[in-house]
Image (cartoon, rainbow, N blue to C red; front, side, top):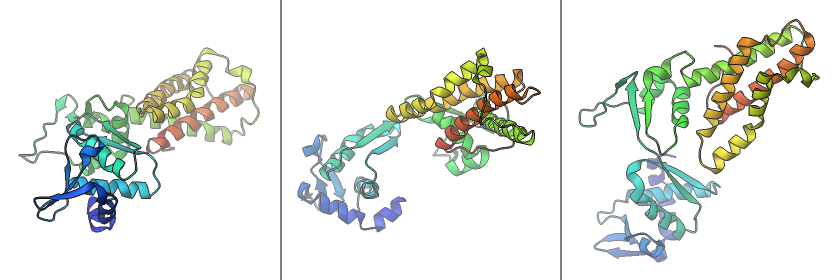
Length: 290
């Protein structure tokens, strides 16, 4: 929802109505008694010239989320917004909503290979997100953003994000998915399926390592959500991909022995399921050919 549409909607008036018993006028401006809700000072909602503040607009935006049925509000803010947290908590609490979380994310630094990209607002030297998406692609941006914990600065290497090589993490994962699909389709052409297979053919060290990792997929997703730690998922998928690529190079998944092929195909398809759904959760495309 755009801020402009929020400002034009009736949400502003709805917020003012909900906060009416906690507001007062002073020197022509309308204030919210946020000190009643553990803020360090009362906050202006409407300036004396009649202009609404960003604070009031933000409360209206969050009210819109609440009315759309969201029961937890998670905000990701920059490191310069620490002082904004208490007033937002106060405003939402006054409206009867307390499931509000703020994650402070450190800044993103752009670079081209080893060369830093110097941003300057004064000289109008910067990258917009649209420009970055056009150059590096939305998949790479999502991957690079998710790989870093919020409390660590991110050095976004534009050149690396564009590479079609294994050192580019998004390429590495998407290539795994394409390989899995290729193996599955090749098996279909050969008339091999894995509805019934002998798991004894999957007791080698490489197979066991992959199987153990796949087993934790659901746990990683839950842990990522509960801990607000989305970086756990891409790191997990990269570990799976490393094991799978190694296995693909060392073993012929669909070969002459039909029973062995069935078992290995089952493992391949399990890997495809995990990588496909893992990438989908992160909003990253899953190409079938690369």
